[in-house]
Length: 253
Ligand SMILES: Nc1ncnc2c1ncn2[C@@H]1O[C@H](COP(=O)(O)OP(=O)(O)OP(=O)(O)O)[C@@H](O)[C@H]1O
Image 1 (tube, helix red, strand yellow):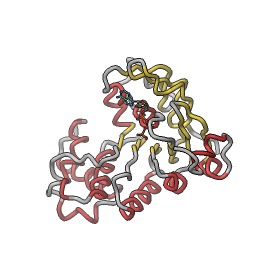
Image 2 (cartoon, rainbow, N blue to C red; image 1 turned 30 degrees about the vertical axis):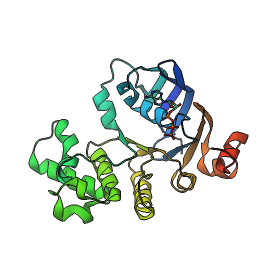
Image 3 (spheres, helix red, strand yellow; image 1 turned 45 degrees about the horizontal axis):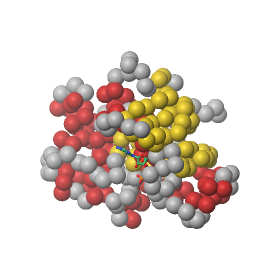
Image 4 (cartoon, protein in one colour; image 1 turned 45 degrees about the vertical axis):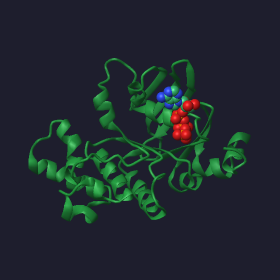
C-alpha cells in the first residue's frame, strides 16, 4: 500500500532571536502511525513539535523559515486559520495541564469554544472523548467533580480526551509520560497504540524503550539537525549513523 503522509516539513528552520534551533528539517510523517522524536536535551525536539501547529509563534522573538504541510497544504501562510490548525493538530504537554474546573467542563471546553452549545451534543462528545481516552469507566460517576482531584495518569488521559473532543487529525505529545508512574505510563502507551488507528501521532520521548515499544518511525535529533529518520526497528537494531548508534547505546546524551 502506498504511504500517505499526513504532515511534512521541508527545510524547516526555527530561530529564537539569533539562535538557530532547527537547521532545516525535512520529515515525512505517515498517517495513522506513531512517530517518535528522540535525542539529547536541547537538540530541538520540542521546537520541531511546536512548529507543526505553529505554537512557536506564541514565543516572542521566534522566526520560522521553510514550510510545514498538513495534507499537502502549507501551514505557514497568511491564509491558514491558526485556531483551526491547532484544532486539527492538537498538543499534549509534559505535565498534565487540566483546567481548574470539572472533568466534564474540561472536555466540553474546546467544543464550546468552537461553537457547540447544545447540552445533548456536548454530553455525547464528552462521553465519546472520555471513552476514547480510556477514562470513561473511571470517571463516569463523577463528571462534575474537579479535574484536579484525578491522579496524574488520569489527568494526562483527561488532557488527551480534551484534545480528542475537538476532533483532531494529528496529536502531538511532548514527553507525555515523564511525570507518570510506571503503571500510568503503561496505560498511556496502550492508549497511544489504540489511538493510532484514528489519528497520526508524533511523540517526543526521552525514554528509548518507550520509543522502541510504541513507535513505527523514529527520528534522532542532534544539535538542531535530524540525523536519522527511519523505521523504529531499523533505528534501534540497525542505525546507519554512528551518532545514532552512540546515542541509543547510551554512549552519550
Ligand atoms: N523560548 C526559547 N528561547 C530561547 N531559546 C530557546 C527557547 N526554547 C528553546 N530554546 C533553545 O532551543 C534549543 C532547542 O530546544 P528544545 O526545547 O526544542 O530542545 P529539546 O530537544 O526539546 O530539549 P528537551 O529534551 O530538554 O526538552 C535549545 O538550545 C534551547 O535552549
